[in-house]
Length: 397
Image 1 (cartoon, helix red, strand yellow):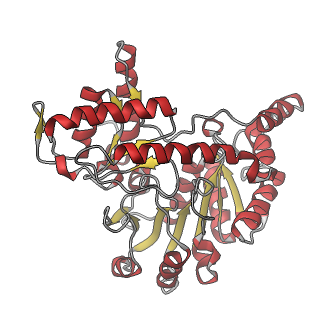
Image 2 (cartoon, helix red, strand yellow):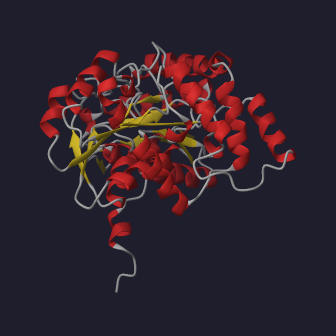
């Protein structure tokens, strides 16, 4: 007898953590592995944010907060959304959660019935498809590629929408591609979705500040879809606060109340000390933390120059986030050192075992011809990682 639920049996493990755990095991066995697997800034939390956490402890913020978060934090989020995104929200439209991942799950739990469809443009963050499965929904994948800059068109989106479509879920800037949708591209997508009031947009904007070209546009800026859009964001990427677990959603009132109801039965309010520190982070001028983005840009340029020299890699220059997502279809179907490369997961494992560089295959991102590298690492590690991969693959070209 299988004691586990069908819901759990439908889920897969995160390939990101599979590869990072494998890299850790190899390191523990004395192998010099450079792991470029996890999407985590390698900076320390800024001092003013840490000081706010110390102050919160000393001021005895040790009791439950309201389920959707402290009012002062929700007001700070409202101010941030107006300052940075030109979006008008009220505190009652904000729900603060235990990370942006929970914010997405709250929204999906509030929306999805068994058999409902959620459109996912490929590539997508590894957890999106699994979250949809968890809620009993079905993912509808829209293919993109290196050639299309990993972005869908309005025509693709319109063809995919049916009576069963409940949501469109995507990230911009995108994990894993490092691209983002421009104002005009989002406007064309918004025009399509506005025709279908039964469809909700779930816009994951967690990487908005890590943008090397321009200010990121939120699709919620378009009035015709404002009431159909859930904006997802959080503290982990821009403020290097991954372990503090603070995310938030900004939604139409009806959906915000539903998210609060879901969260109230799951976890209640998020960590109170982290909430107080987040108030300081959001109230600080973003320019104070720009040194992290500048460092990421320098690393991006370094890796791009080195990765272009790796045989069989087709690589785009990422415009945002801190990932490269090269197309490695040149190697799919080949046998390298006795290893059959059926897809990019096989290739990622081959790179780890032979070059001792950890990356993540693209199968769980919906792109089995690509692999993801995080460049949230030191320049020394990045240079050495690219050198090892090039030296390995030069043998087969």
